[in-house]
Length: 211
Image (cartoon, rainbow, N blue to C red; front, side, top):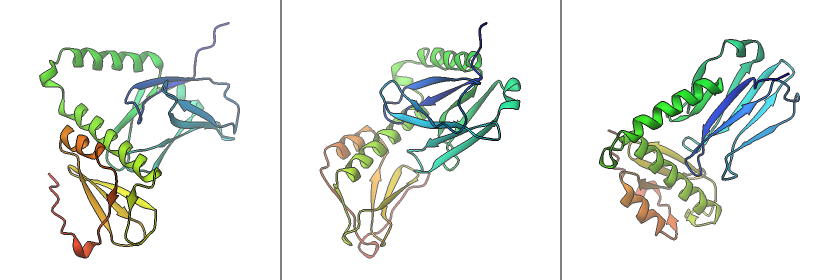
C-alpha cells in the first residue's frame, strides 16, 4: 500500500538561497524533534508532532532574528492546498506549506516567470531579498568571530532592518552602527571590512532613508 506524505514544507535556505522541499509523514513520532536541513546542510527549521496531534514548525528567521512558529492540526491537513510562510515582522517570504503538488506547481510557475525575464530585468524584490540575506550572513559571521566591537566591551548585539539599512545595536548600551544595503557595492564593501566598531549614539547622527 502506498502511503503519501501528510504535507510538504518548502523553505528558502537563509544560507545559500535555494529552496528545499521536505515531505512530512503522517507517522512522525510524537515529541521527537526533526531537523529540516537544506542540501547545503544548513538547518532551516525544526518540526515536532505534539501530544495534541499538531505539527509544530519553528523557523529561525535571519531577517528579524526571531523564531517563527506555525501550528498545523493533523485533522486540517486533508483540506490543505498551499499557504505561504512569511516573516511576521518584515513580511519576508520564507517558503510554503501544503501539498507537494501545489508547491511544485507554484515553484514551476515562479521559475518560468523568472526565466522569461532578461538578466537586465531581474525583479527588484528577488535581488533585494538575496542582498539582505547576504548582508545578514556576513554580519552574523563577523559577530561569531568576535569582529564586531562595542566600546562598552559587551558582545551581545541585535539587528534591525530600516529601509535600505541594517542597524546593528549593542544590547547593553546606546552604541550602534549603520550598514547600507542599497546595492551589491555595499555588500562588496562589507565583505572587505575586517571589523565593525560601534559608536555611541551621542557621537553618531542617524540619517536613514526609510522609503
